[in-house]
Amino acid sequence: MQFLNSVISGLSLGSVYAIIALGYTMVYGIAKMLNFAHGDVIMVGGYISFCAMQYWGFPPVLGILAAVAVCTLLGIVIEGLAYRPLRSAPSLAVLITAIGVSYFLQNAALLIWGSNPKSYNSAIGIPAIKLFDGQVTVTGEALATIVTCVIIMIVLTIFTSRTKTGRAMRAVSEDRGAAQLMGVNVNMTISVTFAIGSALAAIAGVLYCSTYPTLMPTTGSLPGIKAFTAAVFGGIGSIPGAMLGGIMLGLIEIFGRAYISMQLSDALVFAVLIIVLLVKPSGLLGKQIREKV
Image (cartoon, rainbow, N blue to C red; front, side, top):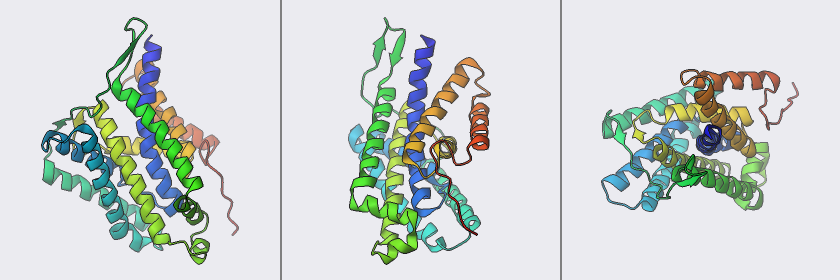
């Protein structure tokens, strides 16, 4: 039964990585930027929901909505102030700016909430399900995380393929200049992309903190890095690839902890990534783009 418990834990953790990775992959696929501050938006979402439920007395649903609203606005502000002026800049300048935004958010959190860890009360009120006479337990957090991931994946797929804004996003992803000539508002489209990615980060922050209930200014750093790894693993720029990469990464990490070593589980995750990229550099579901020179 340990195997089944590990599968459930792996799917739960992998679903969190997948939700975060969707934000990475949407921003990169459309704006061709790596937003390394994305992990810190997760942390902000966790703190906002914590304050809403703990200090302001909001019910969990309103706490989650408050986190989504604040992080959505934060994503738009970050894109407008930090990334939009660098659209034509070298990728190194964008990378340095993203790292700067990340440190700014971490230090702002230190000033506002302090460095002491906060005990996060779960925002998920679903009771645990016990199977096989209690030998297998599906926690409410695991169930909510997996279901949320599937719903987000379906909604995003429909949104990008069926709506006008989604089609504009795909057009900007293919050729920004041509999309602008066809009347697509590129600035608005990229801002919407950052808003969606940041809203997903807020949801992921609530789910992650509900599962691992310790909140600090560095809370989003490690899951953010692993989710970026998942996005690359699945094929950055691919929405199904982000989900597949996140789920596989979560399963590898949990099985590594259970059957190999707690200390080596993270190393195992990155070792598998290196092997995959050596065999298929574009990721599992990524498309290899050929450029004429």
